[in-house]
Length: 328
Length: 86
Image 1 (cartoon, rainbow over the protein chains, first blue to last red):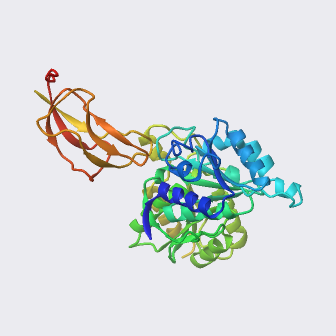
Image 2: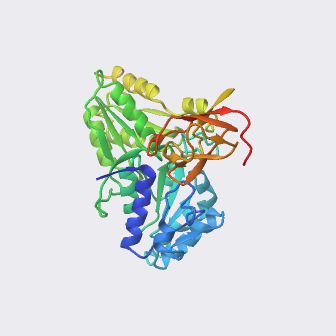
Image 3: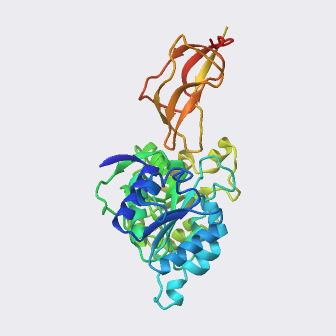
């Protein structure tokens, strides 16, 4: 086991997959000589050459479209879209083309491509660089959406995404960029798509979370340890999400709090809450609640952004409220 | 004479820490404003730490290999006119 930073784990995953399969190539803005805007592709150009590591113009639609065509004709491209917010510029290629090609060709074509995109929420980057838009992508049949909250998951999910035969959007957290964690040495150690991680087993209440919110949920659960036994589930795959793990947990605890950094309205938390209401009605002992960002753009000033994102104190209050209300 | 802190800058959005590679000067050296005092290695690059003022180096507070963070004071300069080049 090596102790790597989050970005180093991503870099390692790319290097290992490129070494394993020569169909894997990387393209994006500044991914070549500069090693990526935040270092994730550092060293790849020198190691694998300019044919497999390509700098592109600033045109997300073109980059993603080029990767889609390449994927349909035998390559396994990994595109970097610098910020999750900029996925909006590439939505035609992602939503109308990549997600549909397998269906519309009757399986004749596949699109084994990966779009890596970085969520800078929590880095004080302003409303156009800090959005948590995972629900936009998860809403589309044909797309897989994953989000590792720590180095091991970021690495293992990216590797699974590269080996997957359909289009996968891999969201990465810039806020976690220099967080270190244990990462497997085995290049075939994967994190399977569609499987959540129980970060903390508990019996009183289930908290489902993902992405940058995971570490604030961990802090809330740790702070409550003497009064509430909290089960923390890191979803890891947003779509298709691990219903089995979540429903089993809620049937046991009878309580669910969903915590995410995206706004609540029309979000992934709503999908989870509705599914739990449909399948666990008889088991619920308190209303399902969500802790999310207010329905407003993410503010630029650090103090306001901190107030905008769910913090451990707010999360702990919601967990405590869930346990105190409803049927004991 | 005014003492001025030598501070590790935040060179990029994701620069949470860096490795102090080493001093290029020592206490007692006369330096010019902008002159490289030390090398600092971030995740992305290795860069020179420029002197915030002309003067004399009065303190070096970290050593080669130390981990440093943006905003950290790593040395001090007694500001004053640099000695003319000889």
